[in-house]
Image (cartoon, rainbow, N blue to C red; front, side):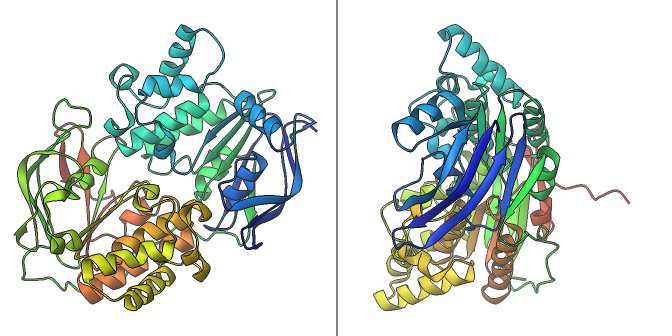
Length: 471
């Protein structure tokens, strides 16, 4: 049998607990197989074990891997195989981009063979095929990209060498529908190609059914995406807005014209506003600016009637607590060597002044509320799945007891059940504590739960109300 063959593969953690497997999987040459299942079900761990690329704390205890009929042994042989035959996109692609390399250099690295000029041309072609302006972005570095641009850059790096085995872990997270179509087209180009096999790990059932010849579900079948929200009272009616923007203009990463101009927006206590728009239009950059992590040119921001300093370093402790941010990349929010229990307890101790025991109890409660298993508190981020890390980042932001939550694609790596758990929790906090939520998303099912949906208009560089759906 040609292509990728995995048989009897099993992965355990340090305690000996099985986190993935036993798994048998065959991806024939020219085939595309999608792996689905709940967050934490072992999809990513199983594939990383097959590639002999497991993080610290996990190990493969059984199983065989064959590529094009030849055995792939762990260690040096597997490393050579990965370098020569595998293109890989991880769940946290922005973290995989070296901060000092340019976009052109990062993508060209994915095509190891050939003259330098041809590698550069291939990088430009691949970037353009994913809807990026290669001439504009080629010399930028990762911190000068939007979240969607960083994801597409990492995807281009995996695609550029036309690898024998392509492994994509949640490739549609954070992508707008137009860019998603470009990803579909890229995968369609591999289908049926000799010596080319593709594995896609995804929570998006519709995407899986479009691109894959076969869908393999690990664990229980995932339910449908979360539906419309339940009606909630407006606890903040009559008082100052929990978050208010007046004439705000936001800088473009890397310089140039303002990315957004003259933004006026008020989110009441208990309110939920969703921001949608094309990748790279400024959704993530707006949230980072409100979090004090990105520059603004003009305008003002206030939280519950108090001016909110533009830089996070200038914000007093009570405002740090009041406005919390969850970014697209949960790795940024979690220290790699800290156990999750300590990471969730720290905001309560530092920002709320709670005792060690009370902070520990709050951490355990929040972990359960976002759907994390009790033993997750004893793990470091490397021992969590991508979806579990995303839920952990949400729990860490909520541990401070904020009045405003800035949420950037926080359900993108979650299966439908986990996404519903998180959104229901936010609804409960909105109703009970008046939490205001400003959320950027490409998921229309998530946006449907909001009180109001705003669209980034690239022409005017402003936020405009979403037009009503045609009858």
